[in-house]
Length: 111
Image 1 (cartoon, rainbow, N blue to C red):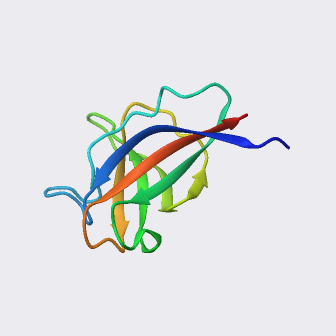
Image 2 (image 1 turned 90 degrees about the vertical axis):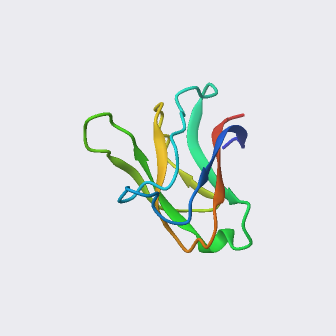
């Protein structure tokens, strides 16, 4: 089995709790539709806080005029997940955060 190559594809700040007027959403949108060839997984990395390993969150898709599907739950720092390729993902339901935190997204592809 070959090693996987990690490529930074984007980052987004999340509030420690849902934004005003929102039930779950704690960030703006980020697109993940432009990916390196042969991308097989995503890796999510939390930074910008002293307790990144105590934070978890979900990842949902913003659907204009519809219900926003949740694609990933209980995402923690360094977690490797399936690929969710879309133009409008956001962070939601943060747990364990005391301040804004940065979520970096990496595409893992076959080297």
